[in-house]
Length: 115
Image (cartoon, rainbow, N blue to C red; front, side, top):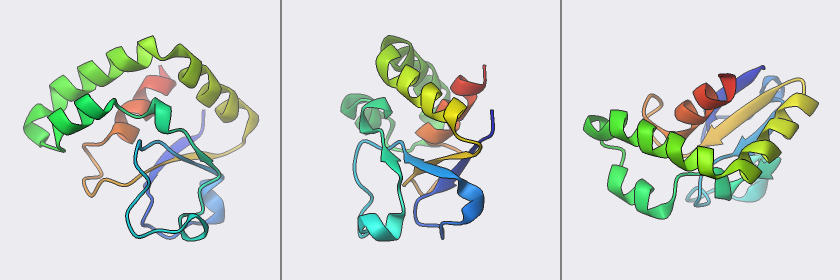
């Protein structure tokens, strides 16, 4: 699977292929045209409770990954939808809004889909 991840505020490129936003909230300050999102799967994002608990605190990263993977396992409908999109497209980029490119849901989701 050719799945890349990219921050939504970075300039879109043809190399991105299908751009799938995996955040529960729409990114601040971006129009749909500027974000260039092909699909928004907000229901695959971490729950509001998990997102607020994590707060992008790197000290909670290990536990966040465990909890988010558990949520993904219970969210089979959204995971199946994403997998169908990935297999249909030559290139897919999971788009996220977090400033931290190492500790965000797209990183976890990318690894989850690759296993």
